[in-house]
Image (cartoon, rainbow, N blue to C red):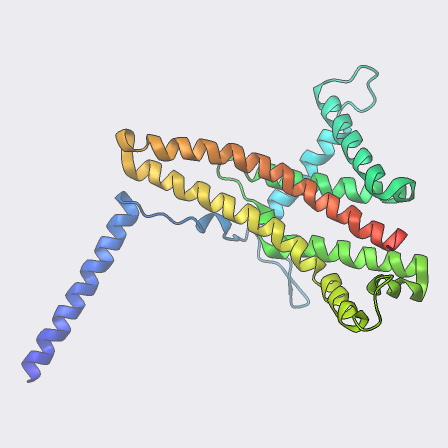
Length: 270
């Protein structure tokens, strides 16, 4: 009986060892796809201040790069009478955001133009930089997108109360609603209002994370299937790359549009 138990244990250990060896071999020469590895945070410095982790990471680095790229695009050659390529792109973005704000907010939104332009440029640069090989997409992390969304939500709420006072609460009371339905609609409006930062952040985070995951998976298929069999996943990867670039711009645009809509609710109520 003891000999049988010993043989069973030895067989189990041998099977586990073979499985580990096979996994290692698959990671070296097989498919070995790990699409989530690109989202890992790596510390460059290990700093703590008062129990708060303020380490400089790869996410911090690419956010700094994004700010620098946005500033360069908007400021490079901005004083030239005849604009160059960078100045033309900067002026095009400037007019694009200004026109969008005029359509949504009217003249009352001029004071918030720097905020909306900054948010649009930061999200756009983060999305586009994430398309570079071996880069890091900061907007693929919910903590970053939720931080931006919470800033917009709290800022719009402060603007609403500063402009209208207690009357800002009328935003939750739709006009012309029968009194029987009013309590239910008020609850729906309150829930809808406080889920704004969640929907705003999850939309950006989910789109960027899903797109980059799909690109990584198809890239793994191209390598695993070799020269002869990898043409189809390569074609799919090229098509997905073009689609992801379009989505990167659209998500920055949607983030800016929803910011304007929230500010419009705060300024003009209904």
